[in-house]
Amino acid sequence: MLRLLSIRNFVVVETLDLELDAGFTVLTGETGAGKSILLDALALLLGDRFELRQLRPGAERADLAAAFDVDDRPGIAEWLAAHDLTTPDRSLLLRRTLDAQGRSRAWINGRPATLAQLKEAGERLVDLHGQHAHQSLTAADVQRSLVDGFGGFTALGRAVASAWHEWNKAVLRHSAAAQAALASAAERETLEARRRELATLDVSAEEWVALTQMQSRLAHAAALIEAALSGEEGLAYGDDALSSRLSALIGKLDAHSAHDPALAEIVALLEPARIGIDEAARALRGYRQKLDVNPAELARVEERLAAIHDTARKHRVRPEALPQLRADTETRLAALAESANAAALGERAAEAKASYRALAAQLSAKRELAAHDLEARVTEVMQHLAMTGGRLEIALEPLATPASHGVEQVEFRVASHPKQPLGPLAKVASGGELSRIALAIQVVTSEVGAVPTLIFDEVDAGIGGAVAATVGAQLQALGARRQVLCVTHLPQVAAFADAHFRVTKRGDADAVRADVAPISGAARIEELARMLAGSAITAKTRAHAKELFLLHHRAD
Image (cartoon, rainbow, N blue to C red; front, side, top):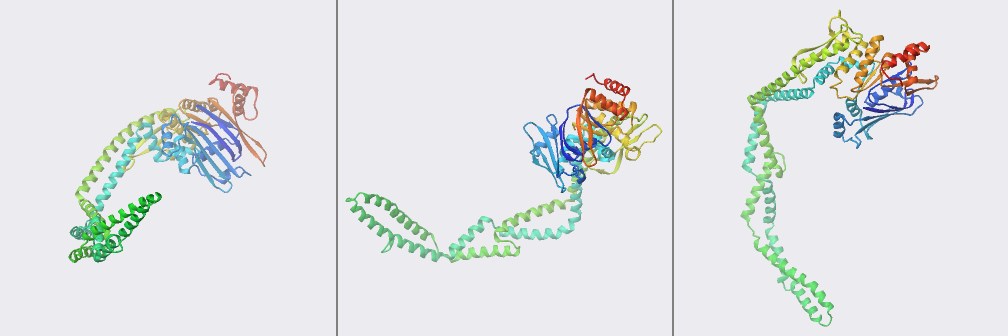
């Protein structure tokens, strides 16, 4: 629910903070006072495009903000959680700035947001029916969504769309298999030859590493033996070996430690070094004894390495990549084998088609029931909105080709009076009738609707008298279930509102300013009188306004 609308430097509004509550709220004021500007500001917060003319003359930047309560709205709460925008108090704050250079920035709960995100959030928060917004009601997808939403089977609609996509993918795979059968034959022959060659070679990553190490060791065996033998002699077995020299030094120092105990500590430090030298010498001997100058083994290893290098060059990969090439070849052959099985793919396509058809049939049956119910209820409401004898028919026309949304097209057809034949809503209904039909649909669908706030901009255009009072009553009834805001010029509508705001404009040609203030009691009676009589307000007009107000409210 919309709680606060804050506006700075927008068109003729310099500063405005509008606090709103539940129920039915109206905004009234003289023509040109700026009533619809408030809704324009809200539309920008919900993702509309900014135009420079909307910046207040002389201002460098416009700043717009709207605060919503979303505690009881799981749809928007889930959306906020999915985008990591949830706040501890489960509120929602939209903010947008617009500057003189045409730049626009937006935030959701203090975090930078895109216009697309504003639109996504707005779709879950507000249904805005401006003076032209109800034109969207003529779009086929909007009409279909209204029927599905009213019937409560949007989830089934999504399942049908998913089944349609799966069916199309299965058909494409089947077609591709048939078309690629000849082309893949040559590729399969090449891949089979490569697989046989790589299977015969049968090299693994571990073998490649072991072979390269073994080749290096065998090729340098003589030099390694010589180095190990030299190390042995230098450490322990030579005439001037380190072990002998260190042992002598330790013995000499140990003998003198009797005269100075400090030398014993140094001897203790040297002893591990002597032991380490002896162990290193023994390790070198063991290493040398294991080494073998084996020309035959070296030849075998080098022959194996040559075969691996030759195969790698042939297939233009590094030797260590041959195992992966073998795995990729097996995978591609398996894919070709599957795609070549046109019969199996054809069966899958048929199964996917059957699944889609079954779900689409369920959807069609539910749509038929929901369409009959919706058209009857809307027709009933139309009788009280200056369209006596008019009716709405929701036609379900079979499609020549199944679509993601089902096997029929939904079309709203309307006749605004008994003698008028039914025709498409877009071609038959006038702007005022469209607006009233939108109201009728909102009244009927309000109990199942998920959007918490409904806004109507002069939905009562072109009507008056008893019909206007009926519109007011319908909006009041709608306000009992949803938050409803309405810009109106009719006192018969305004008198039904739970809350009333008056928009005034003051200033001269150089500086114009619009203000909005809540009114009640005598001020509200005075505003209703102005709406009844214009500037020539008389005692009789005031009495009429008071009577009109008291028909629907207790005295303030």
